[in-house]
Amino acid sequence: MTVQLHTLSNGLRIVTEHMPGLKSASVGVWINAGGRHERIEQNGIAHFLEHMAFKGTARRTALQIAEAIEDVGGYINAYTSRETTAYYARVLENDVPLALDVIADIVMNPAFEQSEIEVERGVILQEIGQVLDTPDDIVFDWLQEVAYPDQPLGRSILGPSERVSKFGRDDLSAFVAERYGPAEMILSAAGAVDHDAIVMAAEKLFGHRAAQPGRAYDPAVFQGGERRESRELEQVHFALALESPDYCHPDFYAAQIYSSALGGGMSSRLFQEAREKRGLCYSIFAQAGATLARLHGMGLSHGRPSLKDMCWNGAQITLIDVERYDPARNTPYGHAQDLLMFTFNAHAVARGHSPEIDAALAAYRDHAPPGIWDRAARLSARLRPLSWLTAPLRLRRAGKAREFKAIPLTLAAFRPPD
Image 1 (cartoon, rainbow, N blue to C red):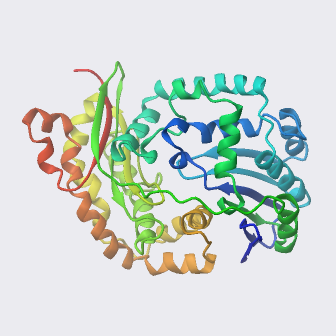
Image 2: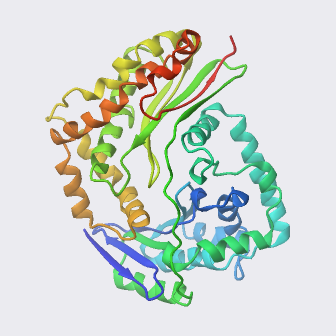
């Protein structure tokens, strides 16, 4: 497998990986236009724009967009994060040119018809309401909010309903002009693809867009804090976070493997210890987050009777991955491979270029056991105070909640009322 890179004269970056033996391909455009790139009056517009891209272009109706891909057995979708907006498709080898054409069409030529804007506005307002009614969704919005107060990275991706209710065609067009420049885009293709053919197609579909300089933004500053709310619920939902290495930090790979092994799936230490062995919770996981100010987070939901046990067993559960990992197990290598494609595109957005896959693999292997745990020890040293914050109610009643905040920490929690 060989990764190839190319940059068009207008700044659009292309990265491809031909994978022998495959008859299908995944293609997409990743745009440096997420929630953190919005001004406060624009909060939610990146997500609104992603929805509108599928509502019609100058060449295709919304139905024609869907039929173009689905009629050939393909799949097309998009998502908005705090970092990026991505439009992607999975198709058979012969349909790669079609997929690129459709993606370029929805990215470059959205129609923004007023009637469709009003319809989609209603859909998004319903989505906002759904999140507000879903504790395990809203608790993570709160986590960002208290980690990065009064900063773009701390705002909801969906935006507040009062702002979404006012977005119009001019607002959407202005955001496209501001953030959808070629220098802010990465065209990525993997599978049964030919690099030269992808470059030629990209030149045809995107090359006419004039070059414009990429827009800088201020790095986020992790501050920490807490927010709690009581509702008539049967479970407690809470999340904890602290700052960890970003994509450009030499400890990035160590943090990724540490996070994956700690809480990245059903085989992770947190899941096995807290759910499988102790039965304390239904869901528990750990992950790393943003580009220039990352989060180590743990999300848990469990019944009220288990809250005391979960709180006071927090030190054991949180720190279990500090133990020396058995080098005979190959879990970190598996996690490394699973993370590669995400890392590949994320690096390109964060650093302005894409690393070779071989170099990325080498970096993961360099930090695999035993080296991963040497670096993870530095992270775990900062994790220790979290064991105290997993008992927020007791600490608050004792008047000692702030005693353990030697480093910035974040807590967001739902709990049943007393």
